Length: 116
Image 1 (tube, rainbow, N blue to C red):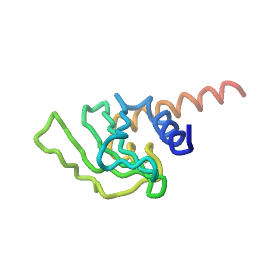
Image 2 (cartoon, rainbow, N blue to C red; image 1 turned 180 degrees about the vertical axis):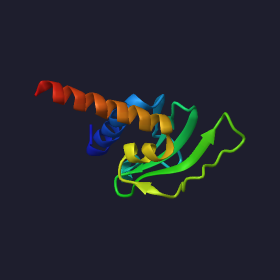
Image 3 (cartoon, rainbow, N blue to C red; image 1 turned 45 degrees about the vertical axis):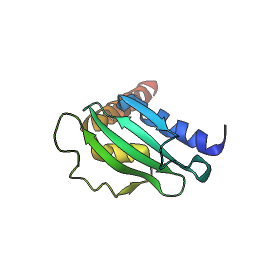
């Protein structure tokens, strides 16, 4: 497994607790794994889909926001914004991810305080 594959796996492992599903789209027309670019499809607990570009150089960027529960397939958030981590991107887009992240952080801090 090369470094980029490890980065992809680490990014997905980091956020998997707070989303429904993540699919790596290696065959997507905008993916170029050899150049360090891959597309990810993330289904959030709110049931919207984010098509995300992961780049070793440019970070993470939402290219498409699809809400099957609405006729509006855009988002008021700037889809051209880049993020350093997949977690930061999801904190910006998904309220349920934010809650899951906060709960996970609380649980970790509680375990630490119980150990002392």
